[in-house]
Amino acid sequence: MTVLEKALGAYLGFACGDALGATVEFMSPKKIQKRYGVHREMIGGGWLGLEAGQVTDDTQMALALGQAIIDQNGWNIRAVADNFVAWLDSDPPDVGTTCRRGIVRYRDDGELYGLPREDDAGNGACMRNLPVALATLNRPDHFAAWSLEQCRITHHNPLSDAATLTLGQMAQHLINGQGIDACKQEAEQLISRYGEFAYSPYPGKASGYIVDTVQTVLHYFFSTDCFESCLVNTVNQGGDADTTGALAGMLAGAKYGVGQIPVRWLAQLDQQVAGQIRRQVAALVGLAGLL
Ligand code: MN
Ligand code: MN
Image (cartoon, rainbow, N blue to C red; front, side):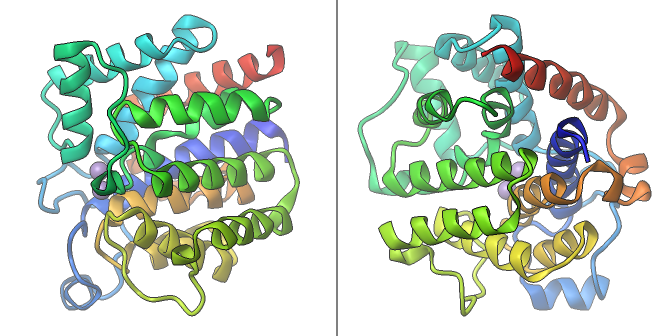
């Protein structure tokens, strides 16, 4: 598999997880089972009343971040923050509370980050970081610096920071062909620093709290053996299912490649979004070759 097939797998996989999971966002596993049996089709609906294949803030914010990197031919944190403002001003269907607070602070005061806060430990910064991982495939130093800067526009919290770096590095290892052992090592390092991320035995919570999100993503990523089962198992856990689905889709897509994403999901996914993703992947991976 080529780097491009894995990078495209990661980004399209991410969007598929968002669109698939959004249907059951904030539902319990029991409720999902009662209503859908096993939820495995991209049918839209959910609390946001989405069209089939429509994505949410997770993918939209990643696209805003990716476009800033492409337009600047590299890193410019103000360009990133400006794109987040433009996105918020476009009146999207869903905006996380912490994301909104940070973007409004930048829009009103020009402040690029807030003071560290306990309650910034949501998954909203981590969820959108894939474009940074793609643009810095060969530059771990840039990866860490850019990631933390974009995170802290909205979330300034050590658990959010650590999780963002870990999941991004895992995506990079997979795309660079280093395989699952390198990912397990990253997970172990994270847990040795912050024991609360331990995911085995899996505690079964899938909320937007970054610890619950990461446990869910890692549990299902490491315990499944193909793209589809990884995503289906993840989103049927409910909770913040679009975001756990997106992050699981990112890792599974990076591991298995775009060729393993079910054709019916790729066909259903919002085609404008899919087109943007294809263009961004080419540009971001191209940029990574130049840095
Ligand atoms: Mn969302
Ligand atoms: Mn969500």
